[in-house]
Image (tube, rainbow, N blue to C red; front, side):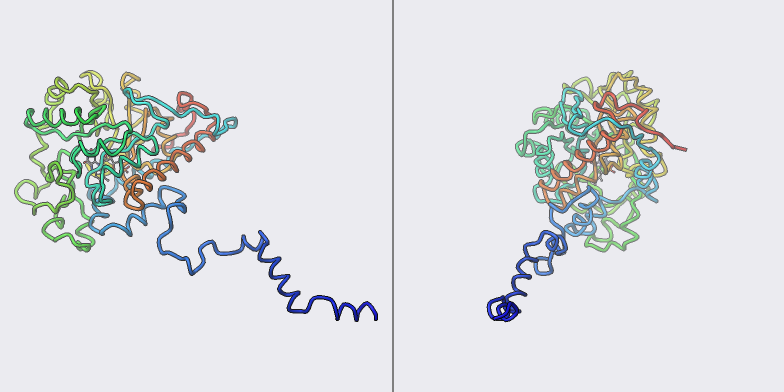
Length: 418
Ligand SMILES: Cc1cc2nc3c(=O)[nH]c(=O)nc-3n(C[C@H](O)[C@H](O)[C@H](O)COP(=O)(O)O)c2cc1C
């Protein structure tokens, strides 16, 4: 019998050959790479935690999880939201100067601010109404922050009592405080924070007048907030002093009297004298949050405060003010290294944090970003978001060729503020 006959008799059938070929292809890494990693059968509308690549990825998931009115409460800012946008735009006006020579593994990013050691110069800013985002509210945020070794500033009017939050995790914690005119009440509140283990007190000095939040009006209050509650100026903002401790996200009363004109009588009396008075009985370091000028920063140093946070409340205080990044250099110069200068406002990327550090910040605080993490995936979301920013920070710092935070100076950036 000839060779061809033999092949016909003993070789694989056409069916077998096709099967063998299919088997080979199925095992091929090349083919695997072509497959959809999320086949239609396993498809979910919301991407998973492991798919988050940047801080921005968390926001739409948080948006999907949270009632519209509460999402808007977080996202919005004053009036035309010019300062909110400017906080972000300012990062585009500062270039990183790329230099060769640093591997991410060799970088030293740890620092110490007012006795708190941190692996990265990153902290969580105080923000109200965290129960809007997760049932365990500030406790969940604290767990996520501590898991990512990030110190947290707990908001004064937390939705969970401070004693309970303190038990949720072990990371370093500061407490934020809105002045209350009655010094006795202020003292009691500050003593509660101290007893619960706060290692510094952040006194917020901006938002003396109410802010006009126009989003609620523009979106016709869709999302369940009664019109009278948040339809007018400044409605629905527990951070603005109508909630009280534990007030959380309860719908506020309709605006009346001075509040109609955006005046919060409870705030208009702030004076340096009052701040001196609370300093006298506060046993932990005090930082003032909401400093935006060199003059006020100098006053903080002269009056013996322990630190400042350059902040415009994430654009939620006065509209048409500058971004915080723009005023940072003059404040750093005014303070002259005597006290730490922290900053917040629009930080969403590791490179944003590198820019602020190069301009002289001691550390950066994050407001909305970790809230997106919390609303999207709970404490694990906060942790992952922070770890993404830490990785980005390392990457951006390495590109500047600097291996230590001390070496990250103004020559690492090119500033194009006009
Ligand atoms: C929803 C929300 C609530 C806030 N509540 C407070 C507050 O109660 N006290 C305070 O000092 N700052 C508060 N802030 C301001 C933040 O501490 C921080 O200054 C600001 O969020 C930083 O800007 P960013 O959100 O762009 O990071 C709040 C901010 C947001 C977004």
